[in-house]
Every structure is written in structure tokens, then in C-alpha cells.
Image 1 (cartoon, rainbow, N blue to C red):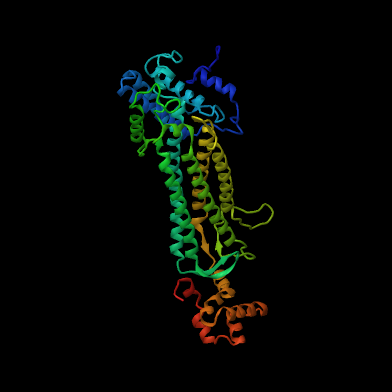
Image 2 (image 1 turned 60 degrees about the horizontal axis):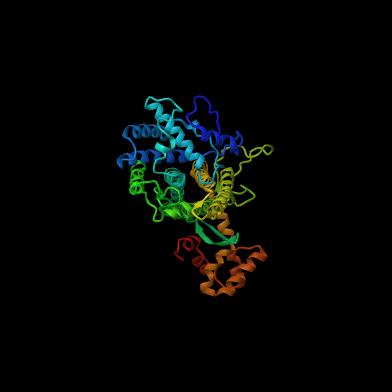
Length: 458
């Protein structure tokens, strides 16, 4: 294709340089849509594992393999991060990115072996990419990166927030308040029960993410171009999976069907759906928090939030539920990431899905956002949540829904008549019950016990 100039000192080669010229999309300072560091680490781990396995199978000279392994270890450790400049909007298979990694490792390995960068003494295709194709290494890297980001980043952050909320639920286990359904007053419950439901939502959300990991732990490496394994030794795939498991501490296994592993990405679509479901739970929790803290004097005002920063540039003393607002913005952004993933995963044609880079980018971006949002919400909101006990008690006393406790004793219709009378005349339920003659004051006090109603003792 003719000569191409590569900057002096760069470890990448001609194919990466051509990609920089041909795919200048979304990589400017204001829009750095480059490959996630976890994808770079994953691809380097694959090259390290491949070098080790190729040597064991007699397909690569040991001294070349050692140099490739050392170069890969440097990349995994975070060195040479500036040598992976490509954006995600490249070939849909990720070919240019795979070659970027191949070229960097080949040149660095050549240098480590005492050779000259650019000499191809250690070749990006013949040595670093031996027994591989972009079509099986990149989807393998996608799964490796997703498992890393979900298990080491997102899930610990979700569990930490869940633990904080569970602690608050235990702390407020007997603090009675009014429940609400349809945004209207309902029967009593405890603040602990309400917050405990949030913790349960997070447990369910984390369980969904954990369930998606099973599909992500299946690796199609060894399938090469279309799934047949052409140009790879028969044992290359299973042995490489075993090395990757040892390198990462994760129980990876061979994909049960390598053709499917290259042509379709339902495992990543399922992981994205789990992230969207988790985002929905966090949206609900954040909205509940800001509703319960609304006011503080002209709203519900049942929760008091930490005063982290001034809430207004014009209204002095105002404090806003900013952590909830940040969380809900993250949630809607995650919905957008999932929409992209769902569409990208549907676009496999014959033996290859060619939306791979944008697919993994959106999964990892969503996971990173949820991780950061959970951490921020825990540190700057959940840990500092406090009940407004006076407002809680006031709402319990004023609620017409307490009349529900009378229904088993006097019937639904008479209980409803009491509630309507109290509402129409601005009186308490007790006063309305006595005025209508349906319940004696003594029976009312015995039957209408908000604490007993909330704790299941009524």
C-alpha cells in the first residue's frame, strides 16, 4: 500500500499509523473515545498466553516467546499506555487495535532482545499473532475485560453501598413511618423496612450481574478467522484458556461453540441488560431518597441529607439532593449505553459481528459509571442519611390510612366512612370514629396501633 511514516520513538507500526490517519473519529481532546485500559490489558494477556502456549506446542522459539511475554507484562502493568492511541470507531472486528497491540509488543520485544525497533526481528503477525486472528482474540479480550471491570470494579462498589443501606435499615428497624403507594398515604411501616428494600434491590441487581459473568467466562480463543481454528494447533485454544485463567485468577473456559463466539455477542448483551437493570434499581433508590428529603419544610422532609455543597447560586442556605441527581443522570446514561449494546449485538452477519469495539466500549463505560456513582452516593449521601423523627411521627398521626386497622373489626364500608368523615371535617380518625359511633375510643386505641401494624403485630 506504499510507504507510511511512523513517528520516531513510537512502538506501533505502519498498520496502526494508517489507522490513525483513516479513523480520526471521536479521539480529539473533547471526545477521547479510545479503548478502555482493561481491553488493552486483556489483549496483552492474550498475547502473553499465546506466546507461552505456542512455545509449549513447538510453534514459537523460546527466546522470542520470552521477549514477547516480558513486553506483554510491561503493558499489563500499565507501561506504554500512550502507545495505544486508536479510537473505538475502527474496523468492526477490532483488527487495527489487535495489530496496534501486535506491533507494540513486537517492537518492544525486539528491543528487549537487543534488536532495533522496526526491524521486525520479532514479527507482529508471524510471532506475536501466531495461531490467532483478530476475530478470536478480540472477542476473547472483550470477555476478559468485562469480567475484570465487573468483578474488580463494579460489584465491590455495589456491595459496599448495599452494606451501608443494610446498616441503616438495621439502625432504623423500629422507627415507624407512613408507607406510600401511588404517591398516596398507605399503612404504616418502618424506616428500616423502607431502606431494607433498597438494599434488597441492590442485592438482586448484583446477583443479575454475577449471573451474566457465566457467559462472559466463555472464551472463543482458538477459533481464529471464522471458528474453524485454521492455522492454530488443535490444543492452542484450551491451553490458552487455561493460561488466561491462571493469569487472571478467573475460572474461564472454552466457548462451547467458537462459531457463535465470533458471530454473536449475547453474553455481552446479557451483561449490559444486567447493568441496565441495576441502573433502574439505583434510579428508584435515588428518587426515593430525594422525595423523602424534599422540602425540608414544604415537602415530605422525612429524611435529612448531608449538606455537601451550596445548592443555589441565588437562594442562600439551600441544600439540594445532588447525589440523587447525579445517580439518576448516570442511570439514564446507562440506559443509552445498553440501547447501543442491544443494537450492536443484533448485528452479526454470517460468521462475524462487526460492532465489537463499540459494543465492549459501552458495556465497560456503563460499568465504570455505575461503579463511580455507587461509590459517590455511598460516601456522600447514604452514610450520612438521618431521619427527621418529628416529621415521621407527624405524618403517622395525620394519616387516614391508619383506618385500615379498623376494617377487620367493623367492616370496610364503615372504616371508609370514618376516613371520609375525618378528611371532610379536618379531624383525626379517632374523633371521626367517635362522632359516627362506629368505634369506642377504647377500641380505637387498642386496634389502631401504628407500631404493631408496621411490625406485623396487629
